[in-house]
Length: 307
Length: 308
Image (cartoon, rainbow over all chains, first blue to last red; front, side):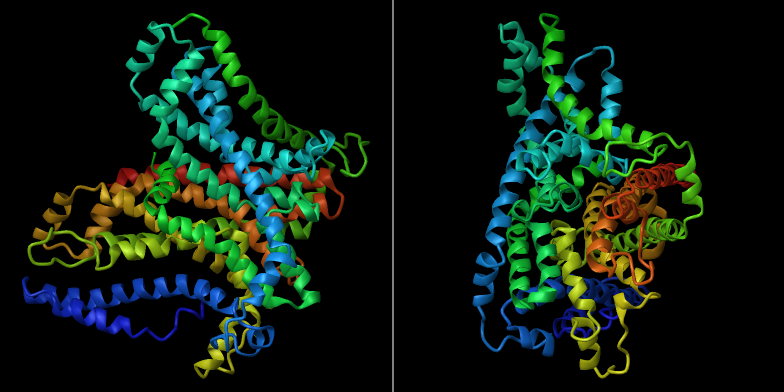
């Protein structure tokens, strides 16, 4: 970002730093002065980074309402009027609706599958002692640090031989398999923190292991399931590498692929405004969900790394 | 809790483990095996060729270029991203000045606002981010060059992704843009758990903010920084760099192989050139690099930690 470091500071910034400087009254004078200079500098940097993060996103939203000629003629000018047609074209003609549907199906299926299978495996690994327990645990964990691309070459042919290539359910199974390492890692740690006494009491009362798991342990593990669920949702919704390799049928494409495909084909068709509308369309639901569930999203995404 | 225990264990593990073994473990084992064959991927026939693929790799200029770029990614990206994130997180959490009647240690004003905004790129798909910046970098009509013209720098109009000496840095900048926010939030969570008394004591002793950072914050945060470092390196070698390079650059990997990375080269050899066996050989090299990277960071980290 060599160039964007120099945008003119927005009007808000000098005002904010002036009030920052003026506010403190207490403290020895030397510290105050040094602190003030540092404060203006550091606050300025924070503001600049915030601008650098937000500008491309706002620019994309703005561009999605412009017509093609002004996108190329004057990228920074406001749209002459709101071209809602871009959005309609993207949704129907550029098949964004189809990509959305595919993504929802794939992510919905694989998210449920990941949570169910992941919590089953994690529960057994966390709570039961049996030969091979450690081995299986590390087998799962190892999957987190291996480059997935290495496995994708043979995987393509494994999936092809099973007749699962370019199918939604095939993609779901692969998504689940590649989400298991982190899910098992996270949920094993979580199940270990839950008290054993409740499960033992249920067992004494005659509940089977299976029933104890589904009726007692799963509800107790809800906070962990939510965190890891959000983590997997974002990872699977934004997944690009797996579908690029395993899902090449134009009708089955998911959002990320569809947008890239759209960008490539716009080179010939020239409907750039429609492409921007598509991009924004794909961005807004996740950004909206993030703003609403901000606390949970941040917890879900950072919890794993903090453990 | 013995009754039916093993039946239950098997019943619960069978499906997840089976799926994982079939789609993850088995392909990994296969790909190491395939790297010793001449399998094209197009026909089911192949024969063992020993180390031929590995010998070929050692004489493959594009492989060396990809390796070089991947190593650069693994080295530069974590350093830049984590330093930026540490600075931002420190400012957000500890950098604020004392307000009357408030706690001794606070973040700057609007700290929660910054945390929310900085995290935006993390929730977006790297594919969308790459597409967006591809437009921004466009030399004629892109946002960056037209911004430069707008502020009177009309003579500075780099080709960005079209310039072999700049393209790789453009790609890296996008990855920095999209990952820094995650680490800001991650480090903020870590900093929040550092007891405030430590900072108060440092302040009473007259420590400057830089001293406070290097003597208190960084050592106490070191574990988080280290795991973040490994995480970032794995991303930079794998999925993230694949998406950005494959979507943004011409070729992809161009111009003139100036942006090609190992993970992209594996993909191209396997699915574009029909050389699946050779692709797995490069993949094995990528695996070695990734594991070596993680081991080195862990090792360096341990030594660093003893100093404090």
